[in-house]
Length: 170
Image (cartoon, rainbow, N blue to C red; front, top):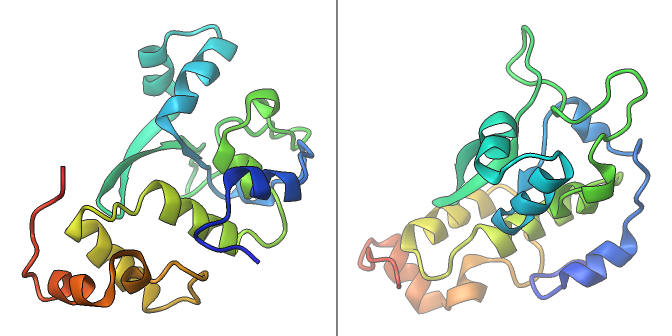
């Protein structure tokens, strides 16, 4: 069972690393953590800023800045990951595959995706982040320990939802 307290190492032990396994890569891409960017840029023989410009889009997830790999969009609003080899279905950065891609490279990634978003993008010190996470949690089964009130306490979460707490902790 995956919980908020599950570690990266525990999740990585459970996942396969087949370069052709990621079906989701055909319809979108994965998140890239800032600390992964230098390694990925070096593997392509590029500088960090050049690599970011060519391969990443910046997005906001739960009021937190995040990076996602670009996709090859055609007529649809989605497309395959820029690093998916269309001929053989293999990941062209498999040897330096980002954590998100490694973790979600399976048949049932829902809990893993939720764990990733919770541990990487939900900021307990940011009321806006917690409000957005709360709204997300309204419509899904939440992993144990992942409900907003379990993260910051019921009283604090109520204050955040009533907009009594608007400031981000430093």
